[in-house]
Length: 149
Ligand SMILES: CC(C)(COP(=O)(O)OP(=O)(O)OC[C@H]1O[C@@H](n2cnc3c(N)ncnc32)[C@H](O)[C@@H]1OP(=O)(O)O)[C@@H](O)C(=O)NCCC(=O)NCCS
Image (cartoon, rainbow, N blue to C red):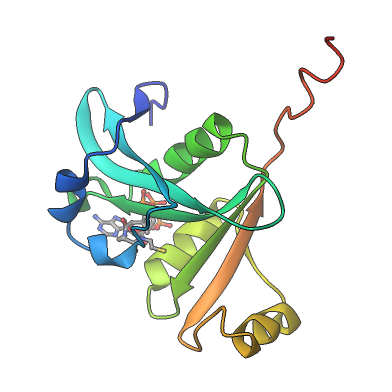
């Protein structure tokens, strides 16, 4: 797929609400969301809810329009998001029954937290028994301005 024609644009909430499966993502005040555009066509929504720690991490939220699923857009959109916000880690909290999303995220480098961490989160009430948490580390150029002064 040609990737350079995919862009993150201003969030269009009305468009999201009309998308199938929009309830699979969390829309919160703290979240930062974008409409995904390909050749100026809206093809989905991607965003993240910043995590308390570590810095530069967050919970990814994504819905692709049904017509364009299976085209690898998830990877391009999440990479663009991570780049734009200099994200170091993206977490994905996914219902265990949402096998498509779990596999799609594993395919692009997300891995499930180990069982100890998952149990810990569940005990603290931060993860439901019906959910799984995956994570992906991104390498970004964080310190590019550090030595310029
Ligand atoms: C999960 C989701 C974001 C994946 O995005 P995507 O850009 O379609 O991901 P991919 O192109 O890598 O395809 C992933 C898998 O979807 C499946 N798929 C392929 N074509 C499809 C289609 N037309 N419709 C639905 N699923 C399809 C395939 O299993 C594919 O895996 P494969 O390429 O190894 O066969 C997308 O399916 C989606 O928007 N789902 C509904 C919302 C959701 O669940 N969001 C995640 C919440 S955590």
